[in-house]
Each structure stands twice: as C-alpha cells, then as structure tokens.
Length: 197
Image (cartoon, rainbow, N blue to C red; front, side, top):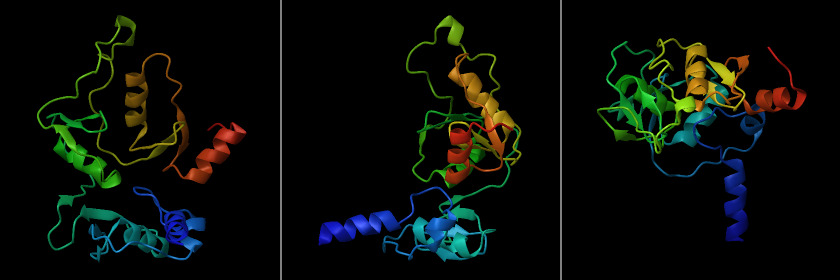
C-alpha cells in the first residue's frame, strides 16, 4: 500500500524547475511538506518548489524572485545582469559570465552549484584542433528573449543558443525550434511533425 501511495504521489507531483502543463495543473494538487522556501514575484513565500509551481497555475504571470523566504532570501533572482566578465563555473559545466548570470541560472535549476568561483570551467579532455571553441562568444547580452532549442532546453536568447551550439562543435545540430520558452507539448509536436520556423 505504501509503495502504491508513493507511486501515485510521484506521478502527481511536478518535476522541479519547469512550469506545469495545463494537464498537470488540472490534476489533484499534492505536494510534500518538505520546506524549501521560494519567494514569488507576488511577495509570497511558498513552502517548496511544488507549491510555487501550483501557484503559477493560478497566476501565470508569477515568477521566481528569490530562492528562500521573501523576508530573508538565500539567492536573489536577478532579471538582468551587468556586462562585467568575472567567470564562474557551474556544476552543469557551463561557464557563466559573472555571479549574477549564475544566480539567474540557479533560479531555473535549483540544484545548480558553483564549482569554481573565480574562473571558467575546465575542459575534461584537451579539445582536438577541429573542436576548439576559441571563436565562440564568451558571453551574451543579458536580454530575456527566450527561444526553445531542438534539444528541448529554453535559452535566454538566440545568442545563448548560438553559444551552446558553438561549444558543441561543428557537428552540432542544435537550432531554434521556436521563439518563447520550451513546453513539453510544443517540443514534442514540433519534433514529431518536423515543423520549422
């Protein structure tokens, strides 16, 4: 019985980091009692990411302002960052232009942590001459104009997608699937139907 209940709760609970789909919003709302506060743009401290995402069902304009309670946030979620270059290496292997850019990414991927505070991420193996990324842009303008990549990931703007494609090398097939944030349904429909922009 306990296994069945655990399975049902896991099915009903949303995965972390993404807005819920219309179907998920229509399901009975079930979240754990785990406390991991999230501060919404409405000034409300939500008990955990699950509760925050269900609140987004009721208010689609709601966005994450900070990680932690609103009164004493642990991580502020910046809307835009300056142009200073002081690289920070994230646990996702991405070099962020500065700490502000890292905090922006952390607001979308809560499990993200800093691996190296003062410097770029190091390549695991030396790149082959044809796979060098010296000509890839080091940073993009801090402009939120999201695009959905063919890999199903939302990029902050087309420059960020181009930078990711460049770093993947000359054999990369990464491209813009559509303007706006990725939603599981749109990505599935476009890939299945091979639609193009």
